[in-house]
Amino acid sequence: MKFFQFAGVTTLVAAAVLFSGVFISAKANSPYGNIDKVMGSAVVGSGEQYGDISLVNGSVQMASNSRAKTVSVVNGGVDIRDNVQLDSAETVNGTIEAGRNLQVTGNLSTVNGKIIADDNARVAGDVSSVNGDITLNSAQIAQDISTVNGDIKLAGNTVIKGNVVFKKPGKKKSFFGWGNNNKPSLHIAADAVVEGQIILEQPVELDFANPEMQAKVVERF
Image (cartoon, rainbow, N blue to C red; front, top):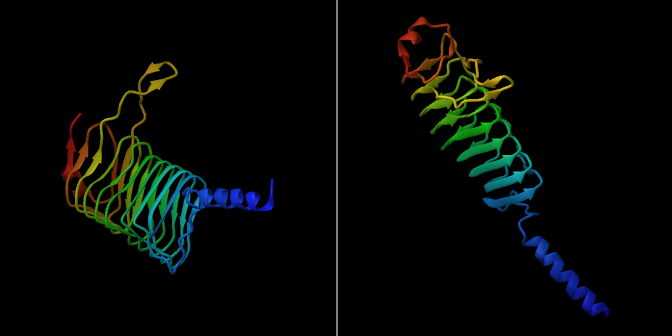
């Protein structure tokens, strides 16, 4: 193969890799660039601004004072430091863990994973999991918080303006047959408030430091 032919092939391969979406880097001076990967993680540096971040197999790490629009992961977690702003974040198999002062204009959701938010998270939408615990500390949630098979812990002066919902679980096949005797739990600290209802579509272990929260309970099973 002549040199100019080899160079042409090399250029085509490089272009294919560049535009395949596998290796995309949005710099701090290029706000709201997107990241779309099948394999590999994404790191958002401090002060950087991204658009949509979509991963299949990989994790997302967001440094303090960074921003993104939607964060969506299939197999991997989302690690969020302090003072991060998002439109929404969701995972299928992974945990969403955030530091202080998280601001989300939409929803936080997981299927198989936990949701943990440190002090002063502000979420304008819902917070939900299927098979994972939800732990909030001095957070404000504008809509509902829900789970199926996870525990919910509302610590500090958390305020849930919508409902807290434990959805009806499907049947799980145990070693001896169909059934699931493990109850999820709900802990509400003395200074935490649920302004809506506490809707139980299954038996739940309740731990209320403020007895007034008992009046919010609605059983639907």
